[in-house]
Figure 1: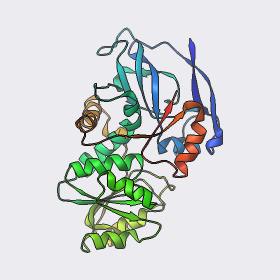
Figure 2 (figure 1 turned 60 degrees about the vertical axis):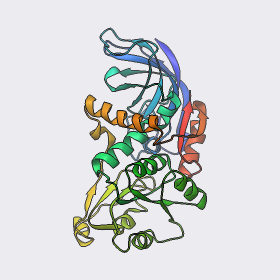
Figure 3 (figure 1 turned 120 degrees about the vertical axis):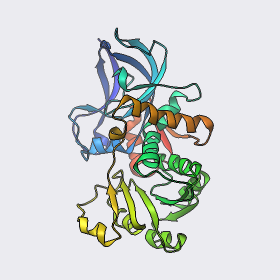
Figure 4 (figure 1 turned 180 degrees about the vertical axis):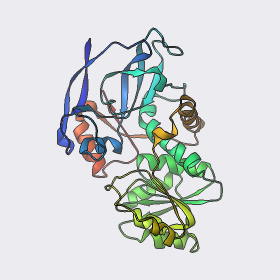
Length: 325
C-alpha cells in the first residue's frame, strides 16, 4: 500500500482547518481503477463540506471532481485500460494525488477535452446540463434569470442557455463581473448590490416576469427570486453560497402566483450509468463544438487549498478554478 498527498479536514470550520498530509492508497479492487490525478476541481460544495453545512464523516478528504490518467485496473473492469484519460464527479475525496474509484462512475475523456478542462467543468457543466435541459427544459425565445452569472457554473450556464436560444438575465456583484458575464452570453446584467433585482427583471420583461429562476446563492436571494417569477413559474434553488434558505411556508408560493419550488441535486439526475453518460456526453458535445468555451481562470497547488478556499468564499475568483496535485 502506497501513500499520496491529500487535503483533509479533521474538524469543521473555516479554511484554516484544511490539513495537507499523506494518506494511504489501496490497490484497486476487481471493479475499480487507480487514477493518477492531474487536476482537481474546486467548487462551493467543498466549502459546505468543510464548514459542516453539508455534514461529512470526519476525518474527510474534500473534493467532488477530478481528472487524470488510469494507472491500474481491477481484474473485472471492462472498457478501461491503463493510460486512459478519465474524469469523475463523486465526492468527497478528490483532493489528492491518487484515488481508487469504482469504474462505474468514471468517464473516459474525448480527445478535444483536456484533463484540466474536465476537472474544471465536469461538476459545474453537468449541473448546468440537468438544470437547463431536465429540471426546467429551457426553450428558444424564453427569458431566464441566473444568479451569480460570473461564477464557474454561471459562465457555463450563460453560454449554454444562449446556445439554446434563451435570453439570460444574470445577477453579478460588480461591473467587472457584469462585463465577464456579458462576454459569455448573458444578455442583461443586474448589479444586485445597487439595483432591485425583481424590479429590474420586471422592467426587462415588460412586467411579466420570467418562467424560471436558477438560484445557487440561497438565503440572500431567495425572496427576490420568487418575486422575479411569472405565475406558475419555477424557482430552482440549487445552492447555498450565502447560507441555507430558511423554512418556507407553502402558502407563500400560492400568494406569489402558484409557483413551483424545487431543490435538485446532480446525483439524483445521474443515478444510472445511462443518465451519467448522457449528461456528460451532452456537456462534452457543447464544449467540443465550441458552443460553450471553458477557461480555467485560477490554478492553485493542492498544498494551497486553504488560500483557494479563502479566495472562493470572498468572491475573489471568477470562472473555473482547479487545484494541481
